[in-house]
Length: 97
Image (cartoon, rainbow, N blue to C red; front, side, top):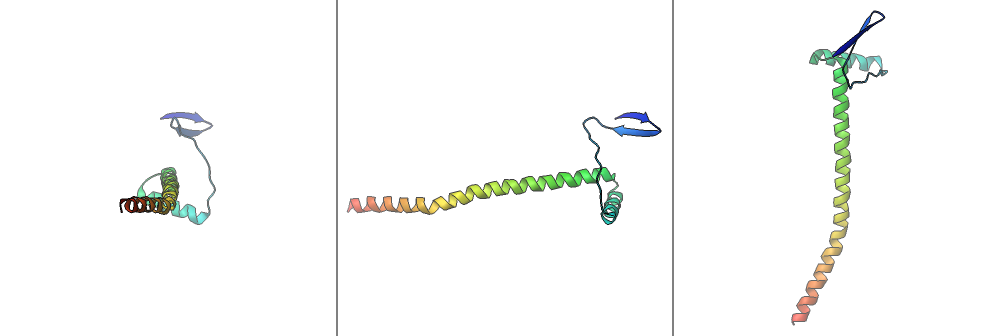
């Protein structure tokens, strides 16, 4: 970690990290603060964990939607393919008699 002492405030930062500010309702802030204390982690780490979990859920949801779209397209084609196969089999059987 690197540090810089500016105007009486000690700033700690890590390469590749960006600071941001957010506004929260007081009740939500208290819940976040309580949970961070319970988990014995900084509030900023709790926010990072929450955002990572949210992004992972969102990615999984999008992946599931894409898979469902592929399988939905396949199931729409299945009845047509099955009908063609039955017709071809029927023609082959009729040709044998």
